Structure formats: structure tokens, C-alpha cells
Image (tube, rainbow, N blue to C red; front, top):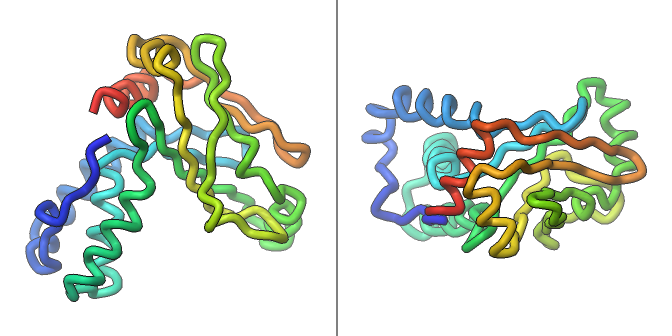
Length: 191
């Protein structure tokens, strides 16, 4: 997948001029990339534009202008993008009640190792970054990559059915990915 390059990053003042239009476009794009996996997990498949938006918003919010700090943000967020035959997904574990959320996150320890995508009968396990794994609980935000075999990537790229799931003792859910999500993922694999 195409990573974000420094030349694409606008200075904060220039970004302010296009921010509303750019954010609106990416928000619409994210709707086709968002999947509700049961009642406690929302998954957003990341791509170049979703990461570019996150970088621009971080620079704006934190008022980052130093070149080294900008480079650090680009490097950090580019790690969210998948490589060849790889999909990238941000999972948000969402429980409204704070006490229930804390209890769920403790019970869901290790859940980051339990996500999968199934394509053409092949189950592809999600891989979470080790440095973002907590020792005593699940993180409320999990960054995953799904490495697909060439056959699974070809099947998904041709519009084949795919299922996203999680199989953990504290939380199990599966959902067939809709046609629009599948098309978006096929575009990611082609990029």
C-alpha cells in the first residue's frame, strides 16, 4: 500500500484552508471501511487517505512544525499501513459504562491475538504490534495487520466473500464483509 510521504503533508495554515473538504471526503470513505464486529468492537480498515488525515490532524492538534517531529509522525502512522497482500485495521473496543469497560478490557487480555479474516476458506490471523500490547488487559484501541496469502488476496481482489472475526473467551463475533468494504479492500491490495 502506498505510504504517506513528506511532500504530501501540508503546513498547518495551508491544511486549515482545505481541512473541511478533506475531512469530509475521508469520513465518507471511512464509512465504506468501517465494520461493526458484534456489539463491542468497531473496526476501520486503514488506507493511505485515512492515515494522511490522522497525520494532518495530529500535526494540527499538537501544533507540530519541527521537521524532525513531522517525520516522526509520518513514520509512526505509516506503520499502520499494510504491505503487499496485507490489510491494516484499527479495532476500537467500545463499552460505554466505565466500570463495565474496565472489567471487559481485563477479561479480554490477549484479544489482539484472536482477530482473523477468512477469505476463500483460508483463515488469516491478525498480527498486533508487540510494543502496543498491554500486560494486564486489552488495549481499547488495537492496530492489526492481516497478511493474506497470494490466493486469499486474489480471491478478495476479485470480489470473493470475506468474513472478519474475533474468537476470544471474553468476546466472540463474526461478520461477513459487505460488498463496499470488500471493494475498498480490493483497492488497497491493488495499491
